[in-house]
Length: 339
Image 1 (cartoon, rainbow, N blue to C red):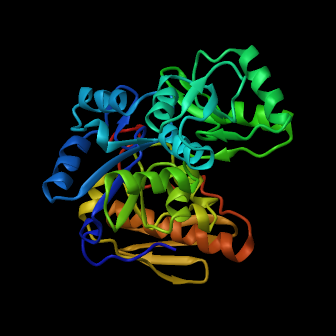
Image 2: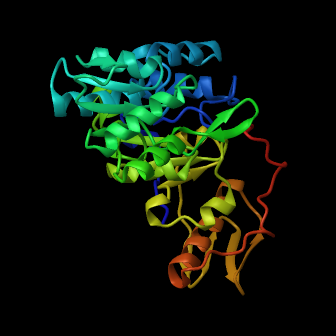
């Protein structure tokens, strides 16, 4: 269930790890108020990291985009799944090893920085690595898949099945990973969220002893926090909404929920629970006949806390998620990225 914090949760942490899309920006625009809040965190002397599963861009390119939307950032603040994949390969195969690459510039740069040699010709390659790259050719995928089937080790930067684009969600790198592994009959070693390598790489590069992960996706950001046993804050400016929370099993549940990043600067009370109901701040959430009902009045933050808690009580007790079709949080109609 949710964790309690009687003081602002930021006070307990010296490293704040941010997912990007849906948390810091949506498309080409920063989420309202994010830049000022990140500056507030920096002013306290805490470390700030931007963590991305996208392996196609270098940290410098990611930092450039952040600065372009008004968020202060330097390349050293950015940690990518390509860097995590490169470390795995360097530790396994040693400096100078040839790695067959399916991916973009971000992946190649990370390999070189780790002392590896990215190659397109499989002769002498000791492993295959892949990452999102819109220009990867099908013939190269076929060749690499055959080599993986025949025993060449395979590291994937991430396994995200979707990627946000200007025209909506599109197939992500995870679709390629599934294609290769299904053909080859093997499992990929995955570096990105929710697996540990990227999370560990972030702490190693940016510093801090008491990290917290801030994200908008349960199956990458929040599960990734669980993977290295750190707290997490789910913000509601991205893809996750009540329907997703209702079906979240324990490894997908955040420590804290807040509509926006302002939640970092606030205490977080927890509901009082009984059976399949939860009460807090004037709200009462109950699952009756399988349907979530939220009654009362109060702060929207407490509405989310009781709604999520009641849904999780129901799921844990019955194995079936609550029907949340009739439950609507107070306030304006949701617009992705808006506060």
